[in-house]
Image 1 (cartoon, chains in turn cyan, brown):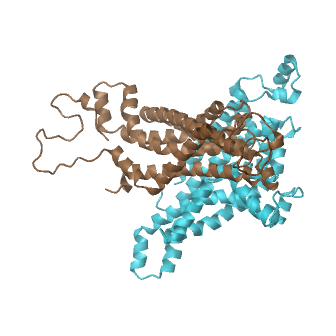
Image 2 (image 1 turned 120 degrees about the vertical axis):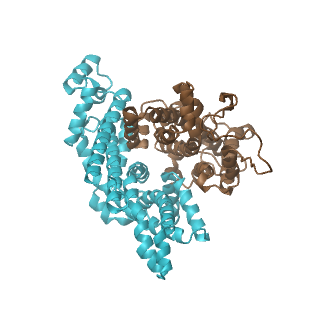
Image 3 (image 1 turned 90 degrees about the vertical axis):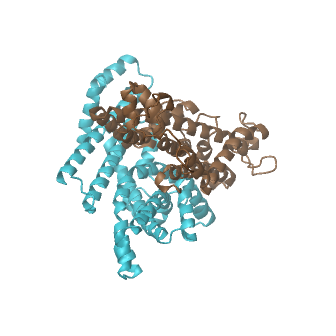
Length: 316
Length: 315
């Protein structure tokens, strides 16, 4: 067990390093020169060469990658020449608001998808199941910005309940937490997409559990149906949630770019979006690498948590 | 599906690994010729009502996008702000957009690029992934381990991020965007094919091919890939759906096809202003097309998966 966890962590570390190396190399081959970003498009090639030399961009790619990874380990993410501050500071400034948005969306998605998926499995092939399946399938095939636009049309423009854009007054994480009306539509938009994947997964997972012998035994010994559902079905059907939370990270990160862009909510997604338009490659590089590393960590947690939680899965 | 080609059969000797086929026909009518796996799968697919719906929607959009402009002539190249943002009328069935382009005509043009990019990116990802997975699975050992760790690495980089970053570097055409998406979404087919190859390579017909002196290339192309094709075909439909969604995200964020080429995502890029200005016809019809096409691909994919899954098959 411990051996498995150590081996799994080691593999994750290798993959995380690989992610940083691949993304750095991709940007080095295709991305704009950092010297041009720092010195402007009119700089002549001698100044650019001198600048590259002082900043280490004339070294072989492998050395650059190694030093970039070494800096990452020390939480040095580089310097944004376009914005004139360190990438670390920029990320740090926005991380709280994005974490709040993603966290609440994830919790909301779980609160909806979990009971929905189990209810669908228990009442399978009923009209309610068909309606829910159709709804989640539609949501699953919908780009998140379109869901956001529909919500804006209904709740902001027709009903005037929530604002269509997050107010400019929401600048700190604390203000985001204390202005639930401002954040409702972004959270629901981000959660909607997550619910679609989660509930499909929960339904099939609960169906698997319902077919197990221990459910049949519980019923055969005369246990009331509600105890069968709460004590036997619920606990076992909840196992895949751990996996789902771990695996939902890339979706949430991508969803953040769209949702924050759509609702103009200042977070990492909006920072990424702005950096795309400014061609601010150090920020793009850092956030892509961080996204990749978070995905690796999510997979790792999902794998380990399932092994710990489920005694049936004990890998040697 | 483990038939080795009859042309390879040495006269009189049954093919390696196949059960001894009696040379005389058995008495009575007890021999049932089962339909081949493919025909069974097709029959299963067409008995699935949702699959028919999905196929119908997809065919409709192919006809709508590529055939529609032949009958519904619109000007999609010259802007005319004077006729911009008109509500739907008989002369403009879905109204006009900010530039005065007819929205229905633009939806058709956007459908063309969406389908082209979706199909091309999915095709490319599938070809790369299939070859990569087959090679990796066949090589085994350390080569396989290294190749698969590389897949793990690429799979961990959020696709939208890397595609967006690369989209800032290249001029956006149907070809360049398909290439970018295709080059970064072959990991799943690679994994699937490798998994299939790992089980297939222990089978007798693979040993037979090797014993008869078949080359590695022949083994991969003639035996392994055809046998692993069902998982690949199921995956291709999901790849198309994902690519169409991804291209819509790119367009929405402003990194879609270069103007004036139409794409559904680009048309929705300004959607927020359109919604707040009350120009609903610029948002919901296009978005509806997008959702329907993606949903159709997902429905077809689900049905194909059920059809190819022997365990679920009704006999």
